[in-house]
Image 1 (cartoon, helix red, strand yellow):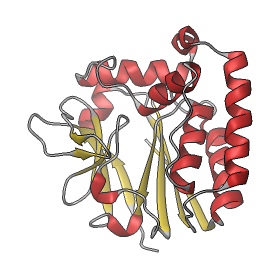
Image 2 (tube, one colour; image 1 turned 120 degrees about the vertical axis):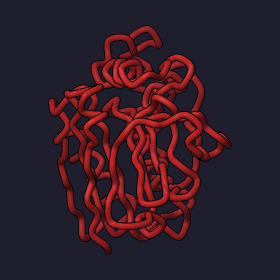
Image 3 (cartoon, rainbow, N blue to C red; image 1 turned 135 degrees about the vertical axis):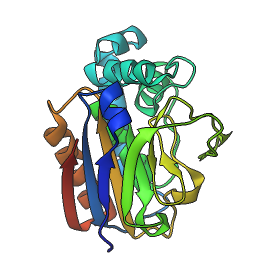
Image 4 (tube, rainbow, N blue to C red; image 1 turned 90 degrees about the vertical axis):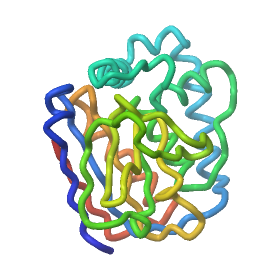
Length: 223
């Protein structure tokens, strides 16, 4: 598995100084569906609905910090919702989560659990050995997964040598996880800072080990 360096640009640091990131690199085995994972998701969803309401999202530090970071970078978070907020709203409105594949499904569970937006990428589709977290530019090309062309101006965005691959709203079609994914990069975006980030990453890594046979696991923290 290739080595990859992740860097935060000065423009992002200036807009949101409190950002902390955590990345997990792992060899994995994806599958189209995992019944034990979905049993865990359904139980988690049931307990989550007992504890929170749609209005409670306003009290979730990770989600609110991501919304504030969007505003600081120049994006309206109500028009372009971060994925973690969208997922939480979905289940709190009584709508089941999408079932995509095991890797995507467990990343979605980790995102709801933590409140952090998490980017999931096929490492073999990333061009070069360097990712930079910056801010989207006007007219910058970007194809969101299942969304078509996405306007990422004013949105935090990870770029490889070719261009943008991930935002908190949607990852890019070019580097998306698929049935063939064997080398995973998952990035947890801590716009609320480092508090609880390690525990949230440990939770996701356990899901990866339990349901995707993750091995050669490496966790990197960056800011």
